[in-house]
Figure (tube, one colour):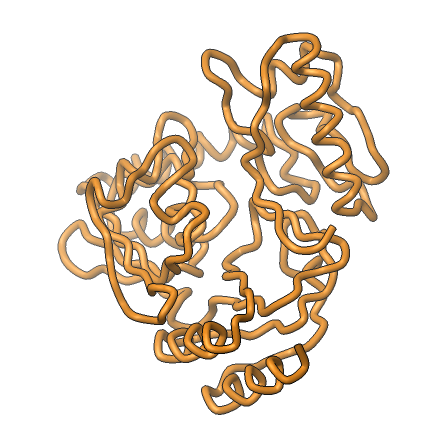
Length: 305
């Protein structure tokens, strides 16, 4: 592996990308959990990303694309391979034409929503307060309060595993509940385009603040978490099932089912990936035993536990 990393280190240096060995992933996830990444590389431009993807492919090294680090649980022993942090151009948001916004995959959803609000563009109000990046939200068709990314995303730009540019729109995006064509695939989201409608900035802001107030009232915003842990089962709500099973407040090590919202697992301090996985297993086992429902996780788990 050292020979592979020597090649990658050289490629990162030639491309002007800062590269760190052994960077703790706990510093870069909203769960504040995760061991060291073999290589942690900051990428600011599309040519840099294309060069790195080609280098990684040439050496057969696994890699993880990182935006805001939400909805992500990294193993306690870290990530064997390279983590690519999207920064620079990938954090920018711009208006391309009337009603059309383009955001880099690393841009926070908060910045995209604020950009739309300031320009009197409606459609993204539901996403205000969803943690995560534009790329991550498109990857999993993030949604809340009756809205989903599939309602507003017009086109997604990506790189193929060979580092070639491509894009998808409409039915090609294969959006469904918490999935898209990119979920579990090898294509790399680079930019996301949103088709929005003209609206009154004051009304847009009021709706956003209303939804944010509801989030803060019901969700544990003051504690590290990865957001909702489980997908919504058909005909039910995961949080309600967990609460009905008496699991609110259940702990394994430093991981706890939130006292505020049973759909969240929070890091009460010093939680490990093993703690979280153990608690997830307990919840799934209890809910199936009492309700006959198999809960599926929404959180992405990666690295060595």
